[in-house]
Image (cartoon, rainbow over all chains, first blue to last red; front, side, top):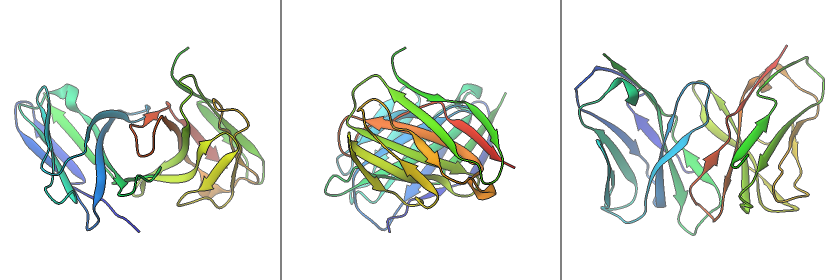
Length: 112
Length: 112
């Protein structure tokens, strides 16, 4: 069974601080997705990374896929209260499985 | 309305009753999924479907039944609800294997 471990589970920071969320596995994934979920809503896709070592930027968010495609990180620069939410990583197994494996999420709170 | 919708958004039922949660998508995506989200467990896959009339079990299928007679609809039925099925249920769809997931807004189900 493929597992994705996310850390930290909870993160509370002040506005303007930087943070990094990690997503780790012993399994290799063909791609990895990051979602953000706000209370009472479904997860919304932020980015998909496919190539080992790939880095993608989305405004103040930087996503990296590990060289071995077993891990990923999400870095937020100068966090804002609007970044508050649950961040989820999800991996698609090699061979193109229909199913995604989700991490348990990192609950981020950015205090003004 | 374009997108993916779920109904009802909230449901309270009693142990032993049958409950059906509806999911409808307007993109004609081939793949559709049902997840449940619980504290401490994250998102867990219940059932998925690769096309009309093709369904398969996910990680936690016991107590649930699905059907997919039309591409756009993917109802989830709890044949005899139990308290352990109290959860938030999300439907999702993608257009390709392991592809970007588009999630519905969720159904919060309480079984008394």
